[in-house]
Image (cartoon, rainbow, N blue to C red; front, top):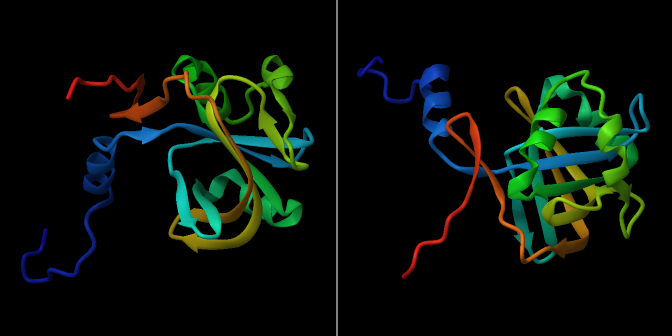
Amino acid sequence: MNPTNPDRLVEPARFRAAFRRVPAPVAILLIPGGPGGITGVTCTSATSLSGEPPMAMVAVDTKTGVAPLAERAGRFSINYLAADRAAWARAFASRGRDLDDLAAAIVTGRTPVPTLATGTTAVLECRTTAIHQGGDHWILCGEVLHARAQTDAEPLLHHNGRYGTFHLHSP
């Protein structure tokens, strides 16, 4: 680190090490289109963007190629995984992995966008409104057309390179 230049960007390894310590929800981004008709990718940077109008955003690596699909389709869904679905997170994170065994879980949502029928804590069906490049990631912004939540499921979290869940502590 150069103390004479306080505006110098942090080293990538130090940046990644810091963010490994920040727990994040695990979601599957699903978009109509691609080689199999539906493209899915695991992401840990998916969050609300605006309350009025209801909007969400998700950041995905440019190497996934999903930004052009989301732009063409005009829709995407963010499917936040339940704690018992770490295998799904690993499957969608593995490029080229055969996802046929998960095909039965993918259904058309209330809007014409693929969603996960089970194994989620929340699902957001979005209309693509903007796509921005941020370094080596794309930021997909969308208006939330439909949302559903499963209140009895614990969330799957990603922390320090591992999957886990959230445990409530008494006040």
